[in-house]
Length: 243
Ligand SMILES: O=C1O[C@H](COP(=O)(O)O)[C@@H](O)[C@H](O)[C@H]1O
Image 1 (cartoon, helix red, strand yellow):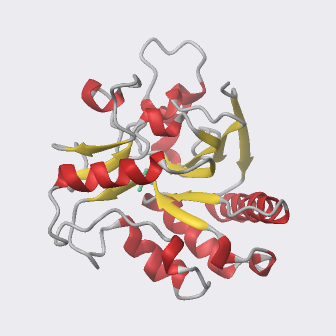
Image 2 (cartoon, rainbow, N blue to C red):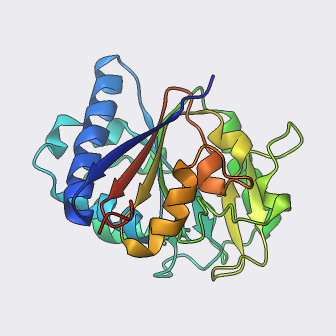
Image 3 (cartoon, rainbow, N blue to C red):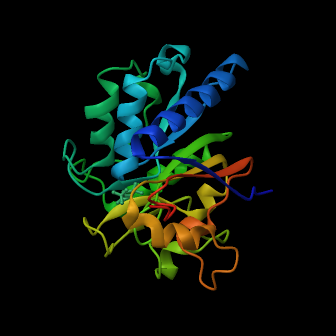
């Protein structure tokens, strides 16, 4: 099953972040009340940063036992550990210092200086994804070109969604730097229960219009992803082309 796209909007990026974080806290809290350790997939980019900072500062963050949340990333840039451009470094800088996570439940993509090849790092992440019973919630920043994770438009090699496609893939010659990355594939995103697309700012408006269109002849990657329980486009007024 996959869920159609629902739009949730707010006047600007700050108000949008507040709404996203409030809902995120509710989703994680309910999973914990059911006795589970929820799986949360983080994202990079502008709204990824805003969400991390938003969780760290939120008045209700104490409603979640963050040591009982499993954390993954939708994609990672193939750079040395500690590089400011890595997506996990954003979480180190903006979230993990303020909120107490269990390091054993924080699953980073290997760093480029860890001694693995890019392909081996992707394969190791794919194995990890394969072991998960469920993926509760995935945050996905949408790029101005309509990419999500490191799944870029026009790259048929990355956009396959068949049984032969690994759950995590090595990305080479990415149109956005750095050129090498590891990304969840559509086959992995197909397992996500609540798939959220995040977009703020006028530069995202052309891509978001296409993501919302029911009859785009060549749907953008962000327009193809669907959660099994819900698919929500969280967008501010500018990204919706309203100002
Ligand atoms: O490269 C990436 O970019 C996007 C979104 O970036 P933005 O700055 O345009 O918001 C993000 O989806 C992804 O995780 C990241 O690696």
